[in-house]
Length: 234
Image (cartoon, rainbow, N blue to C red; front, side, top):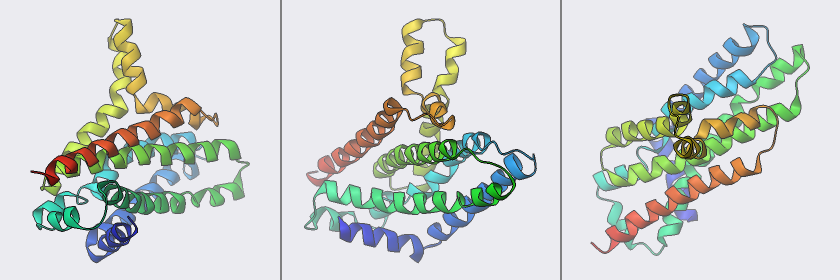
């Protein structure tokens, strides 16, 4: 797993993807932070985190689209499948590499709150709750992106499909206002990423939401492993 992790981290910076991701992430995050706090003269960070989750829908596919699809396109996939490493180690190595880059950008962007703290009294619990929620959403979204990337050798297809799936996860709870069937509303609420994000934004640690995000990540990582388990013997 360590070898795959190092190889994947290195690949982000041997190609423009890593640099583009970092630059776009920090630029959009900085602009969003300025618009929701500094320019509006507000110390409320919940708007910033609410909007940045929607940016993840566009940013994370940029990070994950090449993870497996590039291996298939360049025909290096068989090298991975025949290497002395488990499928779990292969998938987790790529997952942790993407998560490292994402988490590093998110934590670096969060340094903006030190600037805000100079001018206003901040609610530390709310800030940490939002950062934790953002990281959890990122963990789940990265796992989804890796799964989609494992299904195709076309990076653009992987990115577009991931955007579509992430939008469904994010917005499905909003459909409840148009649905009167109780059990359908319950299912949509359970699946919705957004509804579970709200408690964290208020500084409330939601154990059920924590379990949900980690479960989504575990399910899609398992599905990715199953994709390669079948491919190994075909």
